[in-house]
Image (cartoon, rainbow, N blue to C red; front, side):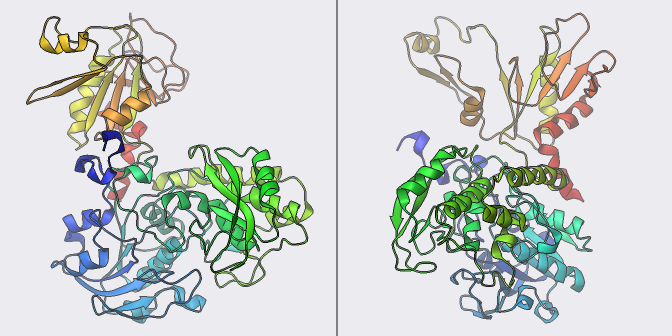
Length: 572
């Protein structure tokens, strides 16, 4: 197996993410001596794959006394919208309370369910979409704990679809169990971050602790975390399914099959009355970003159109960074409605305990359904959702805990002899003192010798090796020869264990930029610096300016630019 294809589970521990439950087990002091209940399902596992219920049941410092199951149950076996009854958890003999029964009242822990407990722990994987009911189970449990005076712990996990935001928050009169609080459809938050937002916006008097994910950033693909993927629900078998879910769940509000009952739920879709080739061609003609569609036929084994051959399409996500799942779902429904107006229909049966049109609950407004029924242009509706998503970005910012990238990188730019290196070498120990792993990267526009001519290592490289490494008991150096590679590739390959990389020498990079300027030094133009370090007075352009001697202030500012100051919010 080549190194670039090695399974992420074999990556060094220092580069793998660790979910919140790992931190709680390493330091169980917050729950020591307490009688706890646990909301979980099969997706709640340690980084080693041990179920959270087992890890806490075996933990001598605490006493796990009751389990609670969200939709699909503690064991995760119930199907979509199937009522689950309570009972006994066979492996532990503990009572298992269902938080997804046959009535809306069953969704929230009752006072008697919490009797005898000191705290409730939540460890369930979310998939980053408002419709996914687990965060609403969490919110209702938070409300119950606030009323009962119980502490609430969230063992945080990565958001498998990253930090992108799509969709306007739903209208306040359309709150439901696919959105009990008004947020964007694709919210780009973790469950722990969402808990902080919900506590604040709902003004809950709650003793809340978030156990954070370690060594994770919002832009990290789930496949790169090194964590096991356990399906959080029966029809989200892979991270690829989670990525398309914010748009494809919209099909639950229609008579289109969203692929339930197939091996590719939410990735294949259609209906018996759709012609696959014209349908796929019509979708591809829209040139939606980051995706194309393949014509297919499929036969669901259960759910909509069970046993019938459906014509439809299958996703091919070509660029996950450009792909807009929610907008894609809006366009898929619109296209099917235009092609088969007589056969297409909106769902009329109750949906998640609510009799109102499911598509209105999912999109958060009746506007989309009305626009599609009129057969008009959806541009205004999509623009409304884009505006709403931008507004939600501001709402969520105070509650974010994780950087956008790992490693985070900050560029120091300026003229020759401006003092960039002086600032950078002062920063390294300051950031290390905060427990961060720090890397540095120096760039020059001219080639320069970095070895001693005549030494064996130099002779190896001079012989024409594409990569030449020099290894001692104290260091490893690898030189790669050829054209200059993109800095993003270099950061990903060489600095994976770092929390932050301080970059010097590039004139233009898509990174936060710190301009360093000194009287008497050359000063090339710097586009949109986020911070300036100077021996002069602040300038009229409004860029925040710090003095060379303000090392502590510079360190704080750099942490903010890197997104690493967000973790300090847990102190509150």
